[in-house]
Amino acid sequence: ILPVDQQQATVYVALSFISIEQARTNLQMQTQLKSFDSIHKFVSAEWNHEAVIKFNAAIVHLLSSPTQWDESNGVYLGFDDQIYTKPDNMKHICTDLSIWDAHRTQISFILFHDSQRANDIIRSIMLIVEQGGDIPK
Image (cartoon, rainbow, N blue to C red; front, top):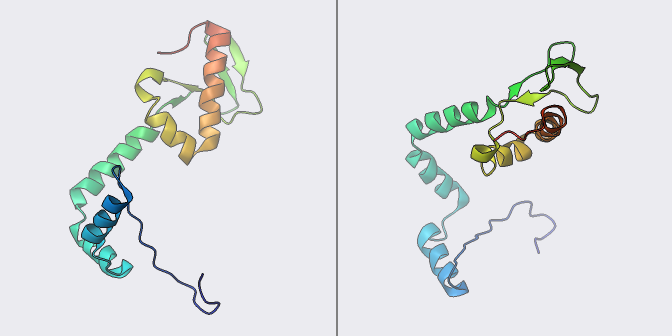
């Protein structure tokens, strides 16, 4: 328990799939119980700028699909070639879904990052099934 006048604490956490003792060894070897600031400085110096560029490009690609399918006034061409108005509980109708490829990575990220978009994706899949009969693969 922190004293009332102390507002900051340093906490060390280590994991091991083997044992508590191994976690302690990992902690000692990986941090050498250095301060947060010294670990941050070391990691920042080791950060690979090229990796940051690749990571940011991957995020852009991750968020570039699925495609927004509805028009500016909320109408969209249904998957049965009929014109529909977007339901009020959706921000956008989504298409170009690649569920098989994306279910473990992209969809999980979108769920965490943008719950409204995740809701739109799920509801769009339901509309695709209702209007066209097939779940996108």
